[in-house]
Length: 85
Image (cartoon, rainbow, N blue to C red):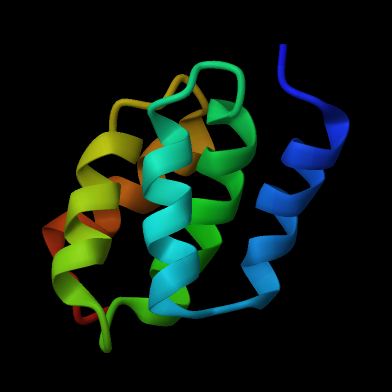
């Protein structure tokens, strides 16, 4: 199990709003112990970065569309359907 510090750091990336933060969250999503935090953070980062980082957002949105968290999955599907909104 990952430490609470690692989970807190991932959650804190929401306010970073950068391409690097998006890439880190994308990698963390692949770790089952960090997936919940990565999904929450990623869903917020996608909104703020979809215009400036469309390829990275699409990659993460594709993963998040399969989330068990209905809110996260819905946000991801909306971005995949129309990335300009």
